[in-house]
Image (cartoon, rainbow, N blue to C red; front, side):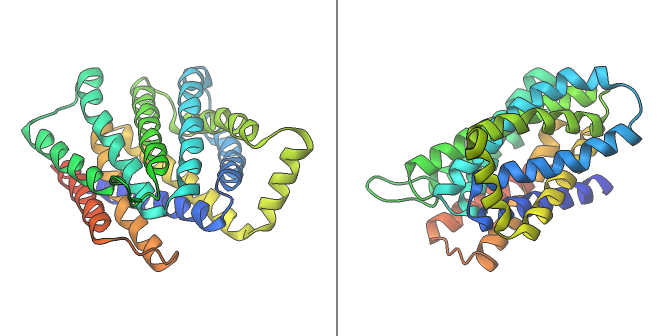
Length: 282
């Protein structure tokens, strides 16, 4: 029960920092600043409180960080094109299609008939969210949908790396600090170099600075909570239940961003959310 509550809180915080990025407007610059803030929060805590064992966390964290960098980049591109609720749902939903079979084959986690049936439901939900022939879909365009799918593949990759890391005895705080510190230079390189990079960051920092502070804290807390629960639970279960965050993203999109999905898109979001609850609580 405690694990469910912690993952639900992690899910709410995850949707919250995605909202902060979408609300800011400059999605890729805002994402880089959030990661920068997360490094500033996490690295001192890891150095002071986590003790030794950095050599165990380092290789895993480097790998996870590259996956995180790809995730942040693809998420930023998708959010530049499409609304929060749809992009978030497609990225989180598509990641489940990878994590469940991968965790079964690589980590020996259970995969039964219930999971197979839920995958069919998930596929239907993602189909409803896809752009149709000659029409823009819930994610804004085919490009927005494909970026969201790519984002989902990145989510699946670093989630499996994190699970392997905690199973190998890596300290979650050290692991996350290394991961964020690895992803940050990649994100900054994507924004430019030299004076151009400084200009982009300064301009982004002038826009809703308190929103960026909130997003950094939410990002850090969300990932650390999920890593803590990963120490005692399977990757597929943690990730799937955490994907109940699609409901929080829907609420943020509706209530704070003024997004109004079509009936088709709403049905797709509902199916992906139901699938997360079905798999995560089964």
